[in-house]
Structures are given as C-alpha cells and as structure tokens.
Length: 140
Image 1 (cartoon, rainbow, N blue to C red):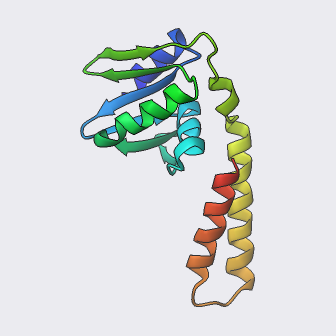
Image 2: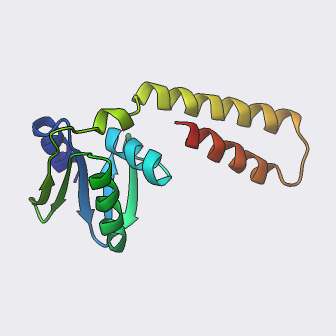
C-alpha cells in the first residue's frame, strides 16, 4: 500500500492519491493533510506516515468536492488506477500543508498537554485536551 502510494506520487506529484484498502479509502502524507482540511478527517500516524481514511461509500462525496475545487486526483485499487481526473487549472497547491508545519502544531499540542497535566487538577481534563486538540488540528 505505502509502496504503491510512493510510486504513484513520484509520477503524479500534483495529484491527490486515494488508495482503496478493504472497505476504506486512504490518503497518505500531504494528501492526508488536504483531506483533513477539506473534510475534517482526523490524521493518524501509521508506520511513520500520516494518513486519513474514509469508508468506500463516501468516495462520491469526496470526488464531487475535489471536482468542484479543481483538484487533480487518482483513485487506485487492485494495483491499477481506476480513475484519473486532471484539471488545466489544478488547485491542489492551495490546499497543501507542509509536514513541518503540521509537526510544529503537534509539538504545541503536546506542550499544552504536558502543562495542563502538570498544573491542572480537573476531572474532565481529557475532554478539555480533546477540545484543544480538535481546535488546533482544524487550524492547519
């Protein structure tokens, strides 16, 4: 899966890559950040890669939005490209997030977490931290 993404990304640098894995589609690294921005999908870490996933029944919703925003994309399944859409005025760069910026936000969240854990004695601390994390993640 990761190898397929890397191979596709080398050839199709200005495309958002969507890979089918079982009953989900996923996007990795810079493509995960784009889907996070557009759909608020939570970014998760997997083997040193950032990724987002969504169920297969959401694919049409995702593709309609990408079409509306003029974002080039590829849908990949069973070791082949099943859909490739290109726009002459591709807007993918408008939605990209630098991984260093993302990691900077993660460090800020961890610092806030450590300060709160050390200094706050509160029964609902976990809820407060989750709300802070959600706010900071939507800023990206």
